[in-house]
Image (cartoon, helix red, strand yellow):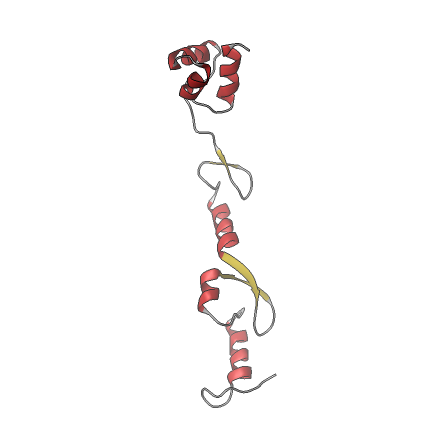
Length: 128
């Protein structure tokens, strides 16, 4: 295989002129000359990253704020059930660590407190 073919192949794989020159045992300048003759880009550009959520090309790690937020919920949240009605709700790991019980809204929280702690202050009631 000729140096030209190898330079073309390695350029499309994203290698820099320095790495190509090192592999072929030729100078960076010679690699640059081959690239000019073959009409290949002479400057290395960072390849666009791919958004891990939707698969679209991304300028940074994620293509949009929506995908970044989705990733945050994926990694920092869990689905749990309301302790009163059993409805599934999403809660962050930090909120789960802080609270002993999980409720979907204040209505369920109030019902749970009335059922389990209704009576005199601090006195536990065995409610159904």
